[in-house]
Image (cartoon, rainbow, N blue to C red; front, side, top):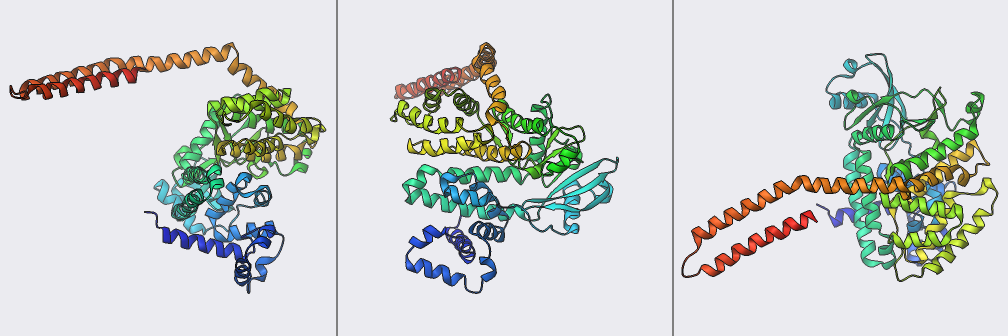
Length: 510
């Protein structure tokens, strides 16, 4: 059960570590703080000169790394929420690296044996040392008994318990922030922590990552130039994930990609178009598409790894995203504004024409830039800043998408600095909108409605039979229990009960 005292103590410890690294408050806010706060900060830093090296962002990321896995993940998550912590702090957190020393080989092999039910020697022909270690898990290169080279991802020991404790503290802080701050309530930190908790629950169950890989493989099986590793299901469990080993060129090694004779411009287009297909077409996207998770295989395909963090968009969110992107491409600012109101993101008390004017102020300067400077992610960032002025509540799923788009654009531009994001993305966005709003989309919607009605129709006989059974039992009860002295209340109770059954049946069938 949540313990306020324990949570307060954990948060106090975190505050102490941040203060010791001089990373608790940005310099401008610290300068305005009461003298007692400034004095306390100085006292925490006594004897900690090594912590104060480097710039502000280095101190912040070092402090979060010191606090451990939960805070590393929190920092990465907050990097997607400039609306909560400010654009400057969000930018500082983008440099946060999820790297930790590996845990011992013996513990890794013991975890594999416990999860898969056999010693490592009975499962693999060879099992090498860790080649990468992060806050959640580490990866080993191994060879199966059948001779296949694989990557084995193993969770850190006791990481689930540590995350559970820290998430409880984050939720405690968020609840109190919403309770005492009107601005915090608008930013919905409780919902943000819940989203982080949900994300971490998936990331701490490697079966969910395996399922994400499988789903992405199915969604993208016909996509040009993109694939994901195959899952070795027989060698995977909750704390162990075994996948095909990708022996490709890291996306970060541009020189090696050039030496292979690859068309870097086409590869950049594949990065952007693949991401947009997954987000807009499928509503399911890789939410951590940095260079370390992207490789180019010998066939020239873009291969995405590490599906611990994924994002989902509802049908409404996808249509909203596609419409606003296409609206900016075509400079239809009135339509973009109306889409915000139709989605319920902007209160009806606001003026749609004034909002359209604000959107034009964002779009026109960006559209006038050279192709290499036009940024879809920058536009979305400015869009979210403007929507705050019109009382739009934060939409965590869209902010995760915007954060991923920033990273994806950065990867694409390392391959093609002159990449025209709009021109590259337009075919994907336009095709999806035309499909959804055109004749084919209407047919799909009709089929979906028919499917719902068919499902209800299949339930009708069972519901009606249950209603008859209830009626028969009540009738028998009334017959047995009614007395001449007082028959009316009992019979009225029976009639009301049957009426409620009939009403409930009609409600189900609506």
